[in-house]
Length: 299
Image 1: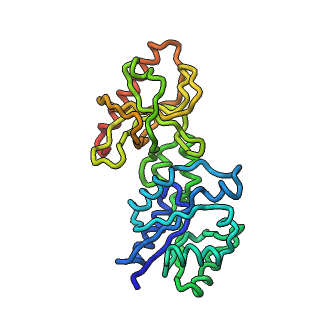
Image 2: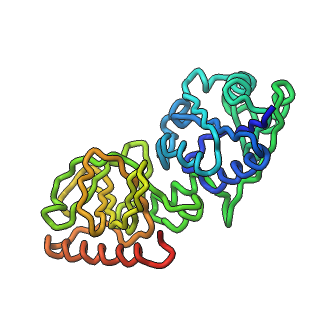
Image 3: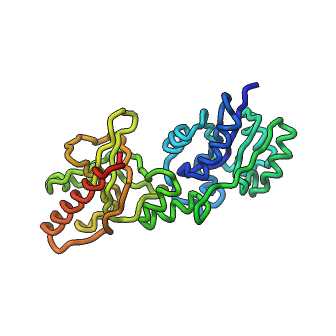
């Protein structure tokens, strides 16, 4: 039988700790397959909604990131109340044995599963004897701290992109469909592609950033951009959103899905005394974003 090695978790952000699991699973699988069992929505959304975290990405982002990191198949477990109430053995029987058809499982050394998180790595090893799989636990990597979705999320919400990039192993990006905004940017000479920030999603702290815009599903290059995050207090806005100005391009992106990648935070959100001062600052932001986008090593 060809090896089928399963990894299990939410994998929000598919950070470098998750990537360590995938590397170990890939090594064990050899010419076989690595299968990721992931949960959607986040389990806390069901068992303790008040404690549910803002997510670093949607399920489509997660699937793409897992695949890019070396996973062959992603099994999305629809996390319901019924799933939350499964015993560790019921979970293993239905998902690890039944859905993933695993003969090996790789998990972090802090892995917990089943109703009230009663199962741990030792429980999984015992169940592996019954259902025919071996268990390998991995010490999640870290630098001064362990890599975790929580650490990435806290850094992101604080505007600390350097830490976010360190934990994820890549710049943070937000994917969404371009919506109609106030159409004010075009009248100011700075047209933007606007994405509404979903209530359950994490986004960088309000401010202005240098970054890039990519059209998912296309083979074109990423385009440098100056990006604003916030509610546009200069004009008393109320809806928090991402507004990306693609440099040197005049694109009609309405209703298209785009991915906005954040490289560097340029400044916090400000309100200026006049529209002229606001425009002057926007042009300075664009120059700064251009310099970052054209810097050696940025691709």
